[in-house]
Length: 241
Image (cartoon, rainbow, N blue to C red; front, side, top):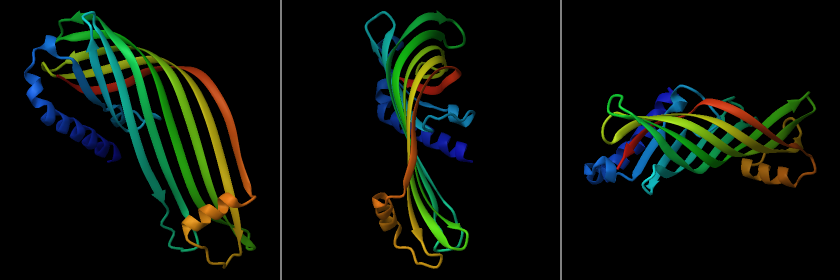
């Protein structure tokens, strides 16, 4: 159901764009400079990128080159319904993406309404943040409130090969495979407060601020770099105008 909701939101964004830009769609294929689309890969394969994103290209010159970019955002939260006011179990997740690069068509094939092959290279930044608030009993002597913040910054360089299959003069599907070099920097921090078992907790905002000021902190920090092959990096539905 969540995947269907993501598709509905992505398609809604494209429909609104289509209605706004419809007067431009009467252009001939040669005069079309822009291509805008949404990634629908999250319907079939869950990766670490945001579920909601927009992709765009802009032709430059007459040799098949285009500038390209992608921006994405996702936010969701979890709250446990434990029925006990003195227990808190909540998490908030945020995911941001920005990407910019260049691509070039290198072959055109007469399949259906037209197919083209292209290569591309991109620089990107993806940040994932998770904030958690939890209370747990430690034996029968006290309970602990924990506030945690985990942040992952991922910088990457992609080299990609892709296929564009035209459905109509304006509508296309894109499928792209990539080799990607990643540098990831992870920082996790935890803050703790200790209470008596029956002690009433202050409001959550005060708990978080007090936890940050406490001496009971812990966490971790590490960096990692790696090379990965991504057979299905993007599956896009796009409009050209």
